[in-house]
Amino acid sequence: MKTETVAIRACTTLEEYERCVELQRLVWGFAEVELVPKDVVVVAASTGGHLFGAFEGDKMVGFLMAFAGFRDGRPYLHSHMLAVLPDYRDSGVGRRLKLRQRQEALGRGLELVEWTFDPLELKNAYFNIERLGVVVRRYIRNKYGRTSSPLHGGLPTDRLVAEWWVRTPRVEAVVGGRTMAHSPNPVRIAVPAAIAELKRTDRVAAEKAQTQVREQFEKWFSQGYAVTGFERDAQGGSYLLEPTPAEIPG
Image (cartoon, rainbow, N blue to C red; front, side, top):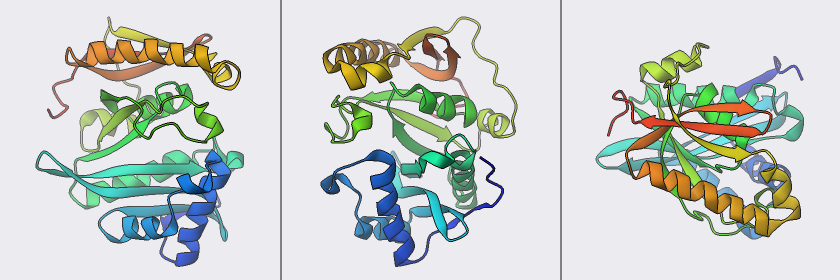
């Protein structure tokens, strides 16, 4: 799909905030109780976070919401939701929203944007690591509890924490379209593509695969390793880990 007519801009009206709630229903299929309500969307946008929408004419086709964060003496943005309608996926809209977020962070003098993602979702992993340049050093077990979303397959909502150090040469290179050089001998954590089907058909097998992946991440993160790359293959994909690069703040 061509997206030249899609504009990225800040959401500013109650109607636009309400559309963000509706997009959550359409994109993730959450039960009503699990939606981030309009009131919280308003708070995020007005207390140091942000809310950007992707619009084709008057139609909102995606949005990106972040909260203001503060940890270890450092302010940052916590990017909580990125949603794009199915017909607009793989069109560059999601990346344009994230690059607009990077501009926002740079304009505020921030160094870090963080968010979480499902380690079993290989498409998201490739996007975050290879298309945006994030690194990952933390694994959180069942961060949100089990949800009603069919995308989660009833599994614990384990998450990796993406660290987007927006001022580093690594990120400058990736967003500029240059290919990252990976460690010649990385640790590999493989995730089979079949996990997506298992989520739908065999939750016991899917949860077993999730546990195996979890144990590997926790082992290597405890030894000071970080995810710095991701490779796709016919069987699924592999996370590439190496000792945390020196350019990444501690």
